[in-house]
Amino acid sequence: MAEHLTAKILKEHLLSGRLEPGEEIAIRIDQTLTQDATGTLAYLQFERLGVERVRTELSVSYVDHNTLQGSFENADDHRYLQSIAARFGIYFSRPGNGICHQVHLERFGIPGKTLLGSDSHTPTGGGLGMLAIGAGGLDVAVAMAGGPFYLNAPAVLRVNLVGELPSWVGAKDIILELLRRLTVKGGVGRIIEYGGPGVAQLTVPQRATIANMGAELGATASIFPSDEETRRFLTAQGRGESWRPLQADPGAVYDEEITLDLGQLEPLAACPHSPDAVKPIREIGPLLVDQVAIGSCTNSSYQDLLLATKILEGQTVHPRVSLVISPGSRQVLLMLARSGNLEKLIATGARILEPACGPCIGMGQAPPSGSLSIRTFNRNFRGRCGTADASVYLTGPAAAAVSALNGRITDPREWGDFPTLPGTPPVIINDRMIITPPEEGGDVEIIRGPNIRPLPLNSPPPDELPMKVLLKAGDHITTDQIMPAGAKILPLRSNIPAISEFVFAPLDENFARRAREASGGLIAGGENYGQGSSREHAALAPMYLGVKAVLAKSFARIHHTNLVNFGIIPLLFESPADYEKLQQDDLLVIEKLREQLDQGSVSITNRTQGYRFTATHQLTLRQLRIIKAGGLLNLARIEG
Ligand code: MIC
Ligand code: SF4
Image (cartoon, rainbow, N blue to C red; front, side):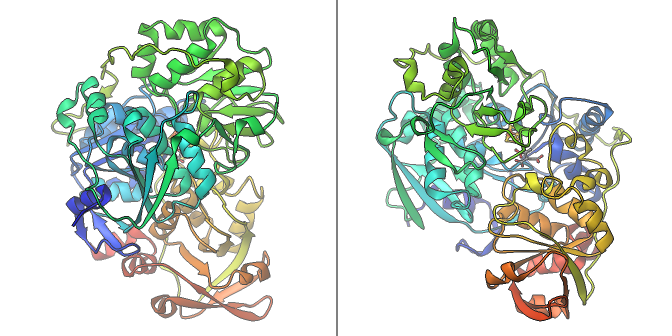
């Protein structure tokens, strides 16, 4: 039978389950990646699994998020991660070497392999034809220990690319158009497989931009075929032997299919405060711009920065605008330097940052109060940039560069004819900042600074579960709202007691105190609860504060799994009207919890208002066992 690419890779890696959308399957993971902000927890959990050496084909630990080093915490985390990598056989990409997704694409990704990463933008690897999936740190730890990764078999959505991109329209506009059409929940439960005649004109970095922002659609992964272009990319990276051709069979049947005529696209922007609030730039109006940031795992390849340089070259950044550029990797920075483009960028007034996540996760470069920032990044959730009342617009690098010159949001077509871009120079391969682990790691000492605190564990839930409604959070709650990041909070990632003080701080500064006082709480949420990042802290820190359950209209995939892994019960409103009726501070009680969970629906008594209502859940039998054990680490202990 004709098969699509997704089925081919899933079948090669399938350990159990049937490939029917919605059925739980287990797959073998070939490669893992972690980054420092989620990695410390992932490795603290990995240590508890009692394995001597990673059992994957390749595992890489990147340091790219916390590189500000405002005080000892970040640096201590880096040292812990470096010692763990040597101890357990993990490649270590040192701080300053680049953003995990960009470096992985350049130096490690292999078509047809599975990659699990403790970062929601791991699907960037789909640009190379990998099945690359983001997950919580504990799932990645289990994969590093050789365990399977469980997921619901996704439906496969084919995006058929036809036509030719007009000049000034790029990869970012393709994914923004999909976000406009499908919204931030349009990809939930799906793998997006790209195909059609339009694919061949996209370079691997462009495909990676598109696959990267599949995360904003909520998709499990996004994947491109591995073709001659993929071969060229890998050969240029000195890794031609890793190439294998991979594509869907002609006539493969998909669960859903949409066609995108690239010729009809125009420069787009995602407006505040959601990646799906997409409009043509020409319709946005001449808004004044205060900051432009070019970089992040979405748009920081050599080609992206070359285009920005060509636009900016010989001119001066507008006096009102602060232009910051963060190359995606040290390779990109080296190539900008050798080609003379770095000098041109510096000469325009651009502020060059080290290759890292930087402003994307609010690690520096917060824009001024009430300002407008244009970013080539992937998320523009309110406050994520570090300034609560700033407005962030997401565009491609061309619009960002032209706007930096004009001081107002500008459709890049106003710049004139599309500049002639010189061919990409030879790739500079310099892996000196990647440390290969020693053959034997048994003697390596693991170095733990004072900020690295033991991991709190949950306990099995009681059979009668009283919970106070701590918050009614609304629709599309992001993990940035549940557990914010930024320069002040991110350094506390390996210190759960300290970081838990900031849970839900953007919505309610007193949340942590109220949660502690309630001794047993529930969060009520709307649609797509927990969208955004993979950070486990958005489950673990509420758990630490006594949150026992989240009752929502629907959940984002990674966050749902993280809740289960830490023993927080994810429940669904049977009727949306019940969300409206609930009030903050209501006391809810679930009786005979285990029996009711087994039956698939749970009757909840609202003792404060005196009524009962029903909740359901989507927990598999395996996940029910985890919940009843009070979390996956407990279950691993119980079941050995
Ligand atoms: C993000 O873009 O939000 C992050 C920071 O990369 C997160 C991971 C984290 O919170 O550490 C992600 O996307 O998973
Ligand atoms: Fe880093 Fe931003 Fe990419 Fe997250 S989205 S991995 S913070 S660059």
